[in-house]
Length: 202
Image 1: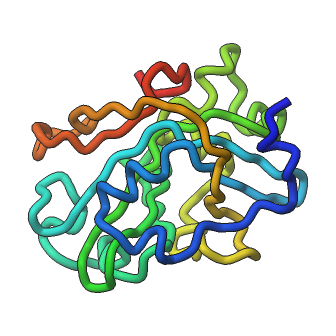
Image 2 (image 1 turned 90 degrees about the horizontal axis):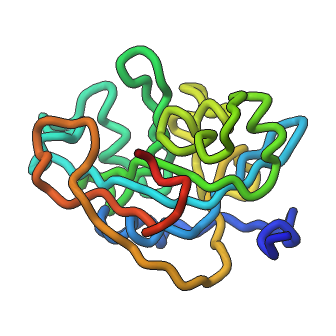
């Protein structure tokens, strides 16, 4: 059994200062840390194994490329806030706002490795192969029941339904690549993932 499961209810959210940095630094720093999702029936915990960084007006793939809009304004706000949006009318995607207020930035959580509450995740998103459960940004939000109602949630508060906690130190090799599923800005190496982890998206 992973030691990370044993600390159970002692999980503590990462502070605002963790997110109040450059977006690519946060995207790298999130790898190996734990998303904690609390519902009435379960506590689900999963390790972050893949992320993507999105900046502001200098990033043509970003929602903030053309400045603040009703949808992207949250990216210019306080670091550590959840940015959840519906992608192509099908999948909810979870991001976390980064950097100082007024400077747009967000990290997309692309893939997770289930740690605890896996049975609940499988009820939410039944799959035959466990490595397919949370190995993509739309898959993981369904497995953890994360929706548009969580847009704007403060991920740095103890009482939040969703937050990110520090994982135990571990040796891991972090690799970079272009971001997936975009056309503009596809040359930028802003996708980060743990090499060899079977839950990284394909």
